[in-house]
Amino acid sequence: VQLQAYGGGLVQAGGSLRLSCVASGRTFSSYSMGWFRQAPGKERVFVAGITWSGGSTRYVDSVKGRFTISRDDAKNTVYLQMNSLNPEDTAVYYCAVHTGYSGGYIYSERRQYDYWGQGTQVTVSS
Image (cartoon, rainbow, N blue to C red; front, side, top):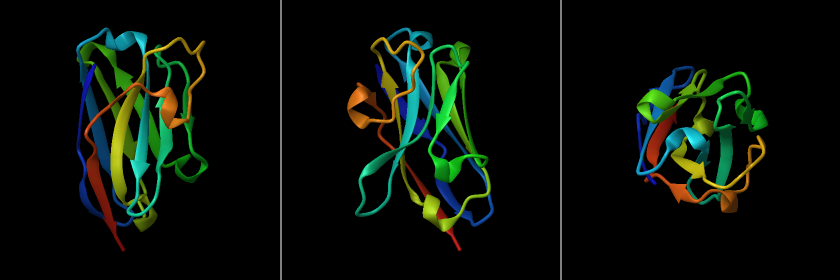
């Protein structure tokens, strides 16, 4: 599976961005997807995830109510709509795919994800 993430940029606090992650190489619709982020000097952490069906989503507490993950299997694309951005959201954002069986569970651990995109920089100015 190859993942290509894009859509990052520089935005003022309170603004919005939509990240996209396009997958190729396998049956995208069979897999759960996740978004992670890594701020300078910090570990890469889970932000949001979505099941293969799109029926369930999961978010880290700090983005609940502001970020929305969705997927369009016809376009092999997963999105992360980010609203009400603040400087603490500044990070490189990575998409990732979990190709194993999950039973509808959305993993937050990095080690559960098998393939990763290259990352896209999001910078939020105050």
